[in-house]
Length: 137
Image (tube, rainbow, N blue to C red; front, side, top):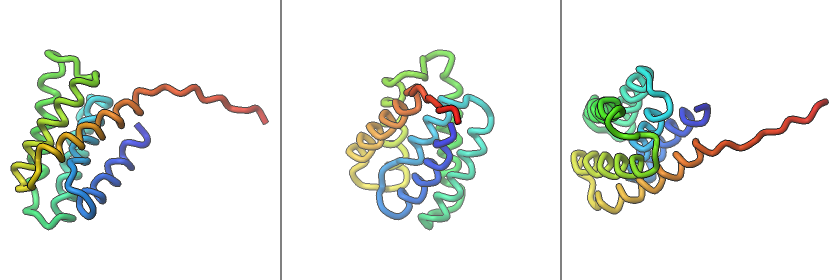
């Protein structure tokens, strides 16, 4: 959890300057799966506002999309197992494809596929439980 918020900020900066991959959407998806509380809506709203500001899009468009995306995940969390790799891949692929199509990016299929692979890798890293051993001083 501690590295997801800095990762979300880094994803916003990368997506607004370097790449068109839906990295913010993937980070919000993973944050939604891990947190499962109302604070994700706040993060989605502000991520959308900052993304719109950095990319010079109409303010609020990405926020509305991110909020609806998070709401749909919360809506279907009881019907589907959202804490699984196939769900992360499918949700990030379809969410990324719709996001890129709405905001007019070209090559939405390839970019959303790459964003889905990124989401699965980050999700796998969050589920990885490494034993940490501390030395006594």
